[in-house]
Length: 135
Image (cartoon, rainbow, N blue to C red):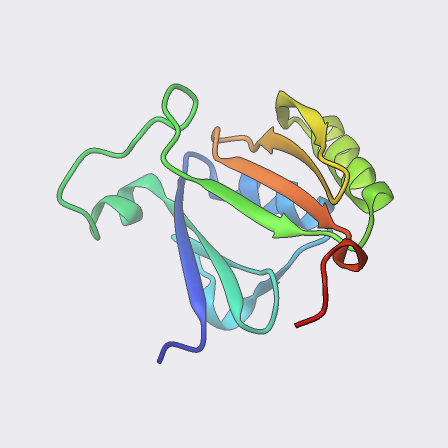
């Protein structure tokens, strides 16, 4: 079974995208980064490959989706608290992200969302596991 996940996203300006996500607190693996790709580390098993559109196109047989006008996916990341969600979203917005939905509080789960510089949609979610029964 697979042990790692690599999410590949096309970006218009690799340097600008790397700077955006670095300022959000993510690190990049130099081993898998170059002038065509930036390997953003989410965890020891989850990576986001930010690929220049030209490089991304070499892997597909269709056109690249314009994430500013269509949604190709929603990437959800967990947070350790409601405050972490709020702080992260606020920081993303201050760095140029677009908030495309109001925060949602479901009691057991709090979520808020933003679109990055290329329109890719990200969501931060805090789930209060104390509200779930033990199995």
